[in-house]
Image (cartoon, rainbow, N blue to C red; front, side, top):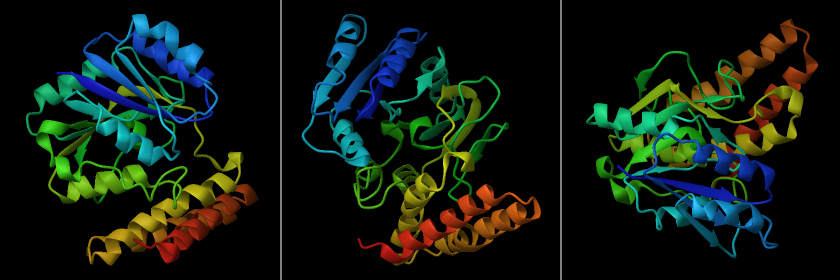
Amino acid sequence: MKVSLVLATLGRDVEVADFLKSLLCQTYKNFELIIIDQNKDGKIDAIVEPFLSYLDVKHVKVDFTGNARARDYGIGLAQGRIVAFPDDDCAYDKDVLEKVVAEFTRRKNLSILVAGSYDFSSSRFSIGVNSPKARYFSRFEMMGVEFTQFFDLTRLDRQQFHLDCDFGIGSKYSGGEGFELLYRLLRAGCTAFYTPGIKIYHPDKDHYKLGTGRMLMYSTGVGAYIRKFTNQRDVFMLYYIARKMFVAPLLKMLLALVLLNPKKLAYSFYNLVGIWRGFLAYES
């Protein structure tokens, strides 16, 4: 069971090297890495070159930018049965791919597998939606984040497996591309399973101490993907409108007020502003 890892990268170098090193340590060897390189200055050429002798790497340089567009381009080059989209600043635990293949082998109807995201620690979760408990999940409680998701191409509708290039970094609506894809596939009937026992490391950037700008930017993508499916008259979006656009951010703001935490209050406020901004601005 071959795994295709589509890595979209722009502006990073040391982090890319760290990810490549983590691939050298994988206990499962039947995989390929497709690097969609959006740098214009050969930034990672010298980093990638030494790994070509040890890993199955396709280093593809493109003349466009956009995270979702790059990943979507990489899908067309993938030769594996399992496809994933690692971030260019994440790293895999040594047995990630071995455990991924084992889960897909064990669970015959599984289309989507989601790993846990850890802040370079064996116990502390990082960004995305995580839980200490492994479980199947539906579109009511989507788990993980883009770089923790693995897809079995033989168990899903290939016409549905694409990134909407209006979403993601470098696109019209920053953020939301992973959840848009995940929701669309779950709506089409795919079965998804989350397990924290598969560990992918990524720095924790989903925290109010890093400032409000990042939250404002990424939350516009969340609002936009809610509006996209609302425009399609998807009644399930009523749940997300209530939860994401009213209840959750207001409760977080109330908690910040009770705790007298102005930074967390501002962070939650800009989350709410960003979601509404994306929702009102979305155009298909």
